Image (cartoon, rainbow, N blue to C red; front, side, top):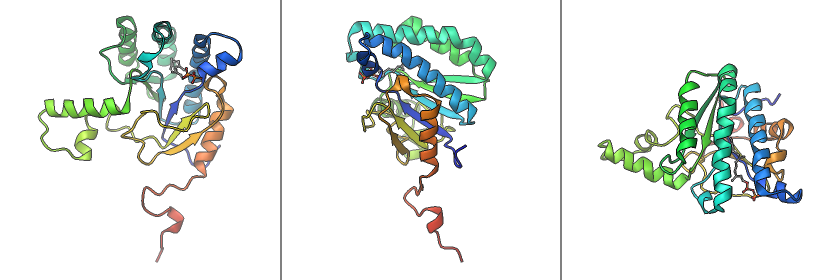
Length: 237
Ligand code: FPP
């Protein structure tokens, strides 16, 4: 058991396409396998008592992918929600979404809203799924919402209230990105200011409990300073 656990883990689930290609399978098979990995990550977060998990499922840029792949991903999400709603409720998994809602196919959006509503009182773990999400887009939407609400002067606290993640949710302590890429790709820009970054070569469909544990172990060894001094550097009189 890692000595220090994050309260909020964010994940860029990358490498589904490569996983499929290496097996001579269509990309969408990689996404289907990716759902299973997402499920394992939720179970592991719950097992370790990590209260918040945020998963990047579809970015504002992902609309540029072939129409069939986009449609498949939207249907995959809907099916996943439909098949798992009762289990979420049974296991105390609260599911919420961040990102734009105005471009999601209606059939998918209906299930997203239903799952949010029906898991509202679940409290073992909260999973935020980022769908049609972009960090810059989120900040611009927040600013516009703030203006519409009559705000006239921005502070960090004011803007934070209008972002997609509810204000009580702590910033991610740990960001995991799979499949070897070392970039943020417009994910959670506002909140990642002091987040510890963990990159692994493992492709998302292969990311299992053991790989999650490696990331947690690595995190537990990090010295966090938030621009100040690490705890063991502080002077004690
Ligand atoms: C990145 O792999 C993955 C995505 C764009 C989609 C992630 C979606 C899922 C794992 C399924 C939906 C999730 C839930 C929670 C139901 P890629 O296609 O960019 O892979 P590549 O870089 O190897 O091509």
